[in-house]
Length: 298
Image (tube, rainbow, N blue to C red; front, top):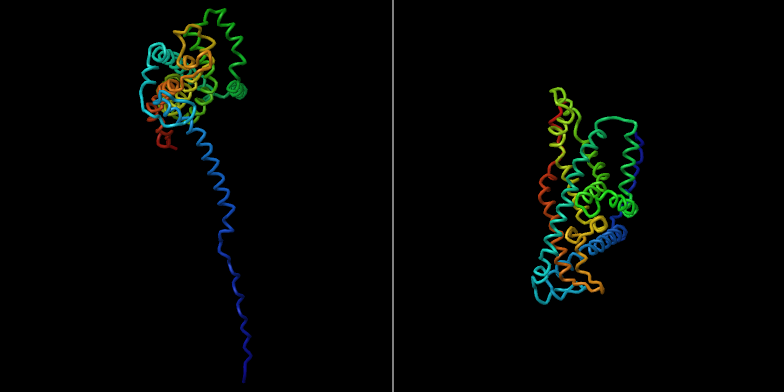
């Protein structure tokens, strides 16, 4: 007796998978190559001027071209390190920018605290106004400001210039400080209020110690912004002995269009040191994070 067995059907052969070859990867390789070339071009736009500054500072016969100095010399630094050229303008710059930065930080903290901790229907319009003022060009308001300073006898004074410089830096400082303050849990302040602390005491003893990384960022940004400001002190300060370093750089440009490039490069290196030192001093603060996980228990 025979039994019919079902015919065994052969399993379909798996479709051949084609390993990705060079042709499959070529679009990605080309796009990556283009991106890298663009990034290198952008980097060169920053590196080449910096390289020129460093090389020209040690070359007494430096020109506009980037070239190794035939003889390394410190003559450019010796020429610019004088009282009228460097020392007094740098001191004036420290007084102006340091004073304006301090006023900006204090005013930004006091303005950001109610914006961060209290609710008001005017909060959003006020924040939008601050955001608008950050993009307002200084040149658009310098004519009425100059007239106001003349009428109030604030022209050619450190106090008036410091106050106006702080005013121009305040909008973005308030915006940044408010964002940093929002990261501090309000439960920490409520605990301080329960212990009898006033809002200002809680701000000083609880919020600000936790905000030091953010305040360091605001201080660095404000000081660097003011340190490189040329237009405001150039308009509001008339006496040569009160001009900061950002304005005295004009001494390297003669009225006939001649420029002493070596001394200009040496002065640029010296001029950039305060901002660099400020960042190095406050960088340890920047390393701290807003770690509040262990401060608030659910």
